[in-house]
Length: 459
Image (cartoon, rainbow, N blue to C red):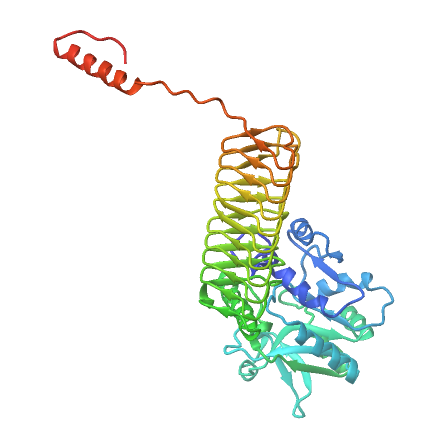
């Protein structure tokens, strides 16, 4: 990978390779999940955060068989099947894993492995079958004969063992004399030699068994995963104007009749409901867009909820805790954080609304700021229904503005405003009559003085 980052922490489709594999594994509802760690294990553990997994450590790294053996002490007395996955197969689908487990449970096989047929078998281990089509063993490409190298069916490194068969096979693995490593693929021959039954299930789509080993692999996997998600949204009835420039995260939901315009990125747990639109050059993370809402262009939303028929942007930023009711308008260069804008609120120009609650049908003028931070603590601003806040006003929290009140343009509000009141805090205006003419005359006199050689000092 030409990287200091552990391979399984490189990302495809917004997830690390390991997260993608674990997400697929979660569909099995396993009684326990064990992650075998090697190099860079502290970074890998940190990346998994609050996931409910157990850890085993492989040190030094002695091959796939040794890695599997490290997990055995953590299995306990559980008699369920044991599924073994590689941490670098991010395209593996839950449905394929389910098929593998179902096949093992239905037929009682000692081992069911996943195979696939790539266009170029290359360095993959070949699945060798006998004349009756039964799996006999797996031969690593470097050890394969000329005839074996012609075999198109290869091993994906995904296995479902009967619990007892897994323990028996792993305990009998022997080091390869050339590499000095233990190969889990040898379990196929071990179980077959004992009269056990080994079967192979071929992946419906060979690409899902593809492991990532290079940056080129990573880029190719990214495009495959990207296309899968776009096709899933299209099949669900969404309109995607330019699929090539639309990025959808693994947990994004796009409903029927939603419209996604070019050059957008939807990430995290984002949902775009029926008929909502996202315009170009917009990034949305962990947010919900209600039916008929419109976001963008050039907007950023993170942890926001947008109500039905509301419109955001262009050039708006909604930070975590931003909640917009129905028919709300948030316009250009408006930023919100931890703020609720109730139905019909308008904040259309150049405003910052932080830690605020704005009542229904209130109007926030251009340049308005809720001053929510005193340098050490945050304070709330409460604005009632039907309030008009004039341009360039500052509301110094904590402060409450009563229902139907008016805030004059340029006001600095430091005290509560009663319901229906007009609040002003302007310095009285002064008009100096004739000032412009006197200024011009003075300027002309100064110029005339210079032309006569009068020496002037100063700027």
